[in-house]
Image (cartoon, rainbow over all chains, first blue to last red):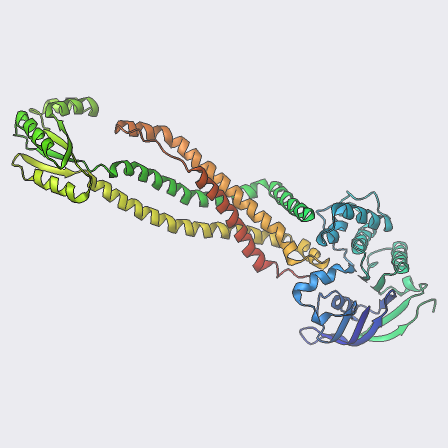
Length: 224
Length: 302
């Protein structure tokens, strides 16, 4: 589903964010991307979402070589990818409903379809009934869950999340990770970047540990 | 198709709501656009009215013959009959110097000044209408009359009309130039407003791009905003023009009445009004298109 082949990413100024990353994630797999901050986790995810392009190497998403996707086709590519951001990236002048509906509106879904899917997504993150709230009136954890609802509303095959629990207390963080695990159970492929090892300690999923732009270890999960 | 229309409707409602949210800023922008549109449109209305005014005189190739003041009125009246008998003259109106003086006294308000003069300063005169209005014929008749020993002056009344028409043609040309420049100004004003709007909404644009919004999808609300600005500006420009005409109407009618004319100001026709509105909407759209083409690409997810 996601495959990196000897991927390098060098930023202007000569800093190597990624230095030869190779790994692959099978369909329906959930993997945590761990490592200290500055290790290149965000960069790796940004390459998947085509926010950036690799300097060298190949990134395949959905069996599609991302290097062959021209700029004008990026929107369509992103429509099939769910992305959760650390800073939520919500529209603060719109209601929760409108935020979650955004990718569906973009995809041209009918009003009934939008209504149904937004409710389903909010239900999954436990926010049903808050449709007309403004994001600012929600707690950080709730805002993050709105962001997650937006990512899953169009039912993407692949979902990537960059430090989704970055600003949350341990209890909320665990809840959100359980949420991701549930999506995985229904067949969604997930790659979740987190620096919080304690949080995922007891989760039976694969870990990719990234240090200084290289995959340092690739291990099966579980209490280890 | 229905979904597509629904999306457009939502964009339109959203644009109107955004304009309504900052009424003062919106009003200022719309006012600038309205003035920029009203100037060339108003000039056009003015030129059209002057054209209509002079158009009535163009066919009339009438000219006036003033007799020398020492020619007795009886002699002048006889000459008038001779002139009227010419085959190249359609009609002649004799203006008796005494009648002219009486009319001048009644109309001008200089009665007291006239009393101070010895006798009548006005000559007898003829208003001659040539048989057919062709310019050559007019000149021929005028030349013949100029040769009469009793003639003091032959004044071709049509000459100043021709000059006025030439000036109007010039004004119309200048108006076209001004129209082009001000149209560009309208597009720039809208474009600049949209550029600011893009800046203000860059987080929203970035997020929309992140969740897969295409350029067309992101651009559309801004185009609607541009069209709304242009259309509102054009509508206000129409109001300005019609308001000005309504204010000028009565005095112009009074003035025309003093010249024995039933001339009244004509406003822009329905078609011209429609053209103005469509032009405003198109210019707003074009300005927004330019702004989005230049600035939307700059907003990329980071």
